[in-house]
Amino acid sequence: MTSTTFTIGKLAAAAEVNVETIRYYQRLKLVIEPPKPDLGYRHYPAEDVLRVRFIKRAQQLGFTLKEIQELLELGDGHCQQVQQLAQVKLKKIEERITDLNAMHGALESLLAQCRVSETDDTRCALIESVTTNKI
Image (cartoon, rainbow, N blue to C red; front, side):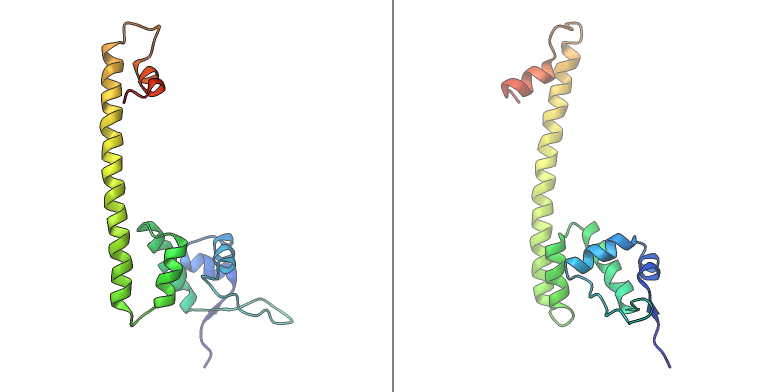
């Protein structure tokens, strides 16, 4: 009985990424490049489909590739450490949301100033505020 394996193209298709993504992950050692036989193509184990999908999903959740490497190195059986990494990531996301909300408010205020000065086309309140740092 032979286990299912994939060429790089089939692996990429199954994981819903392109081949260059697989190659990039290999350069970063996130995915191990199997040895190339004298004749034929490299064959990746079926587990690599799940690994690549995990990497992509973790990226969507905001984890950097370095953080994903840490998660992969921890693996199963280290739930507490994984939770700690996720907690740190959650805190960073919350801080980023706070920053984005502040940026949103500042831009809304600047746009309101633009609406007030719409009749005066000689100066732009938004440009003036950003230039003079009056935000």
